[in-house]
Figure 1: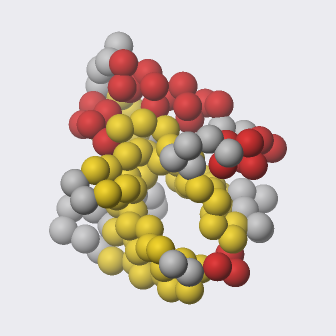
Figure 2 (figure 1 turned 135 degrees about the horizontal axis):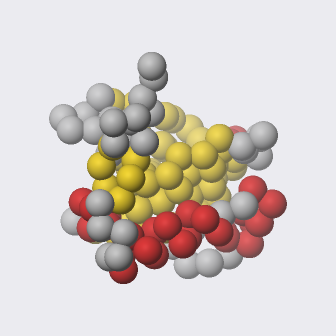
Length: 127
């Protein structure tokens, strides 16, 4: 079984952010790069709470949507072979910290030798 979060921002370097889809499986956490963070300025929540694009003709939006539609749990290991994508074994995770954040929730994942800093601009809405 897999749990997936789309449109998550990952800090890849000082001042550089990318959009990722996170897929959590029994084996680990997959971070699949889907676009640039500038694309997210063209998204909002509609009346039903769904995340929708406001400028669907924008190339950055089309790139994010195309990559998200191609992600399939059966091909996650193939995605990890592509530049910018990662797989974190559950055993390698040393620390996880979730912070409310000023504008959006933040997640820090400490892994042996590195740290992943993630933002959730469209957190889950529980009704």
